[in-house]
Image (tube, rainbow, N blue to C red; front, side):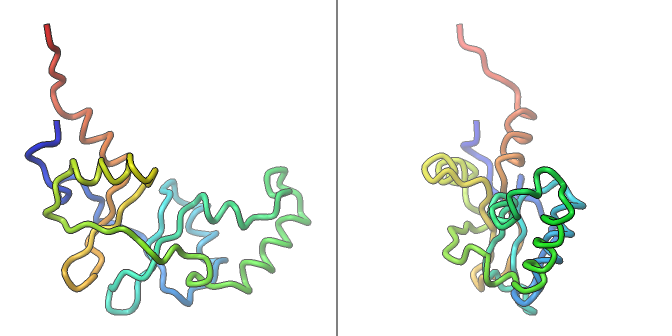
Length: 148
């Protein structure tokens, strides 16, 4: 199904990103107002430094956040205004180049249980992100082959 296709064909390029010194409070606002699950961290030259997942962000939240208690919201606000992106980002990332086969992205996700892979050029500049959603969307645009 993915044998002749490359990552560039499916990657998301319209990304919301943060800088390493942005407050986690900003990350909270981004995740609460968007439906995506991964937030790349880049420097001023667009070099990829890390990635913050919605799952990792949710682990930081006070447990009472689920119940929307005022106390939990206050705790989160104080906590999130005291931490920055580089404190919580994943740093040791697996990346791919835009000309990598889609099958390589699929293999990496299956083997490592990744949900997103940053796409970079030779200078580590962020070009896009491939997510499981991107791959599913692409897969279901392809004609299904039904064997006899």
